Image (cartoon, rainbow over all chains, first blue to last red; front, side, top):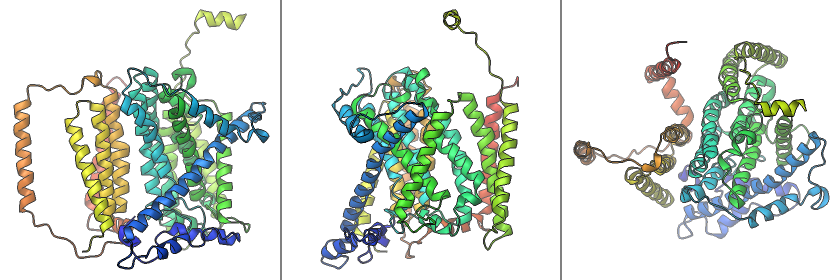
Length: 418
Length: 167
């Protein structure tokens, strides 16, 4: 953020104020760590250590902390997914390593790190090695403006939500690099499918955010949380929430939008040729993106760190993120994968009009009630959302082209009849 | 205006990365790597916008250039055959050099003859609202609307071209 603003006195980063939340818990772990460090190092006073160096050190330390929180979450989201998928499929899921399989992520990590790391002979080696990094870095950048608790923000950006949309769109370049440098047609097909998917779903994703931004009047994520004074935005924006959830699961390339690595068609898409820890890094990127996007959904629609009961803000935030992640896993276990044309129809003919309708209706509501929306609008909003979704789904069903039935090869017929 | 040391350091890192990667775009034979370097160049320019306190422009630079344009560029490269052959030189070498020399001269003339002034005004704390006020006020609203109509026309044109005649 603006370097000038940070050069003033001894409170360089909002994040360190948030460390006061330890004081709330009686654990005096980092009481005003930033302040103390700043004073100890001479602060912005002339003759001391230059202020930009303090900013750089504090920024790096804060980034280190936030990235590690995200990284700690990844193995347990993977474990949660495996456990829940197991339950959905009437299995037990991993339960051998540690209590209830809690140490399974450790075992997986050790396995990945000791596996052979193979680079194809015909691959573009430099690009092939860089691709996992290019894939994972934008995802980690996404965590910078997320408000974990009151004032606990690493980078309190004015353009917070725009920054997140911008940064995450760059992750697809990593997908491309991996797909192209592998020199393998399945990887390349996987990478090409991503473009179609991302280009189509980025539009409803951004348009669904617009409704929330209009309600708050700010792009700043902390301001968006503060703006949800009594009720979460979900109640004012049910339509926007539906569109955003669907667009996010497409953006995350998760089932039912996991065309990109449809195992039955493309082996595993752009990371077919990856093995060992490079594959591990890609996997970390995918699951960190799930954590990050559920944080964004919690912030935009579920009032972030706020909650009805007196509980520390970050607990509310993590709880809401966990609910949303479980929701994604539920969807993955329930809905089968869509075909390419179905995905395109859904994106352009269903989500895009709904997002536009949402913007118009929200703008109208704000114009009609500039001093805050009345409570009776909540049921009206929900009824309206239900009607619009039902009508749009109906229209989509009529317009969708009937599937051409391809006769099965004889070998399958004999298998089916026997 | 006083420019802080940190801002200068950030500027020089970003400027060197931008220029080096931009030269890489021209000099590399491998088109795919050249496109990737173009993305690096776009990103460092976004960084320079950040040092100028233009946070909204920086985010839009990343979103549009690094996120959208470069992805379409790379997509076009992926659909091209024989990418590894690179960009072989053709018979237009001499006209190309001539045009390049003309462009370089023009740029140098403009660069030398421009009076580079530093604004004395303090940078805005929040640029988003100020930008919106300018874009949607009487000042620039016409240009804004004309640009959007132009984009709409381009989009409809693309749809018409892609559909063909028989539908």
